[in-house]
Amino acid sequence: MYRRALTLLRLLTALLLTAGGLALVGGGGTAAAADNGTWSVFPQPNAAGSASLTPDRQFFYLEAAPGTTVHDKVSVANLSDRPMTFQLYGADAYNTPRDGGFALRSADQKQTGVGAWTHLAKNTLTVPAHTRADVPFTLTVPAGAEPGDHSGAVVALDTAIEGTSSNGSVAVGIKRAVGARIYLRVSGPAVPALGVRNVTVDRSAPLVPGLGRSTATIHYTLVNQGNVTVHPALSLKATGWLGGTVLSTRPTDLGIDLLPGQSVQLTAPWPHPPQFDHVSLTVTVSGADISGHAGAGFLAVPWYLVGLVLLLAALLVLLLKLRKRRRTGDHPQGSGDGRVRVGAAA
Image (cartoon, rainbow, N blue to C red):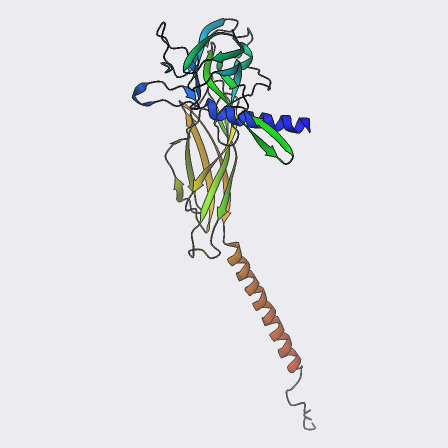
């Protein structure tokens, strides 16, 4: 029972961290904090002595060589009318497998990257209402760290339980968290690479071609095989039986930042696929000066109609055989009247 409750708590915390970790850029070029309307987390404003609750930096963009340490400060702004107490920790980032969203490891999960390298001056922080608190932290890059991009966040987790969620007889307390993203570039060769795998197509078509609308969904797995974050675009091309193009799309921004070593399972709609054709499909993803592609083929055939035709053909063959047998039975070999003719004597 305890393990089940702990597992549910981890799942809920991870979902909340995912929502809290997504920060947006406000209009007019002003940075916007990662917040949930009650508190926000962001890099300390550059203006000395400023007590503003509005950031001037959206994320932490850091660069360091293996074996070195960088110093910075994170700001936690309490936007509510009451004091709040937070647990502060560093977290690794990852892409959610189903949509590629930017997500963060929870406090009780093992951190192996930015989350493990980040050390805050305080791990518990109480912030008065309508006040901002700044906390120094260091990020120490191990000597053997892989060059390239490493992402994570400094997370402020509200220690108060705001509600419960039940699953059967197990009630789980819900805590909310907000994270300020860290984009770290470790010095060394940058090797971008993208790959596409597991391309499949799910189709829906009318029983009789031309008497309804067909749709399809393209499924594929996108993999970042390099060591830098990639912002990919998707293009699709499909050809039919005689080489004609039945689908061609221009590169479309997928709206995700695919982190190194991550893979995500994505889909793309195909509104009007062929209803009767043999199709070869190519899925291409591209980034800055890189691309990857994979293909799949399928036979678009109205199997119901084909089966019906085959059944009718089989019935026709059977009827012809029965008719031939009946004719043979009604007319045995010999003359038709049964009489024997005797020829004249020689």
